Image 1 (cartoon, rainbow, N blue to C red):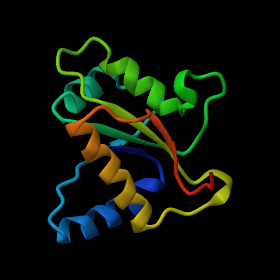
Image 2 (image 1 turned 30 degrees about the vertical axis):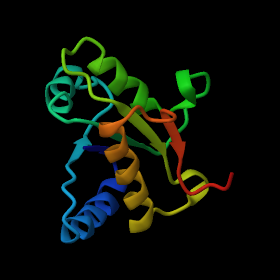
Image 3 (image 1 turned 60 degrees about the vertical axis):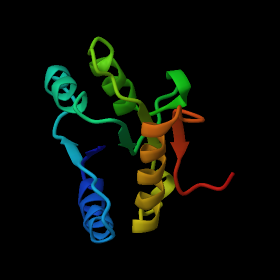
Length: 130
């Protein structure tokens, strides 16, 4: 599953439609509000998936693993669940960069890999060099 918030959801939905044509099954969970954060609803929903990719459009200074705000909240939501899937964070659209279908394709590939083996890292910066 991909977790999105705000305007990036439209781009994610378009990319997911393209990936569906290729036979890939990807779900999108859109967060509608940050406060009060929907901890229980997300825990119930996301614990059903085999892996979760959080599309963050922000960076939280001092955060564990140098992730985004939503990544931290979602990790917290799933902490006490019995079936806690691997959670990866993808920091996107920083510096005004746009997301294209190929970016989402790479994100989905990383999330799919996390269902099979432990991810090499927890946070990925999308669209940046280096």
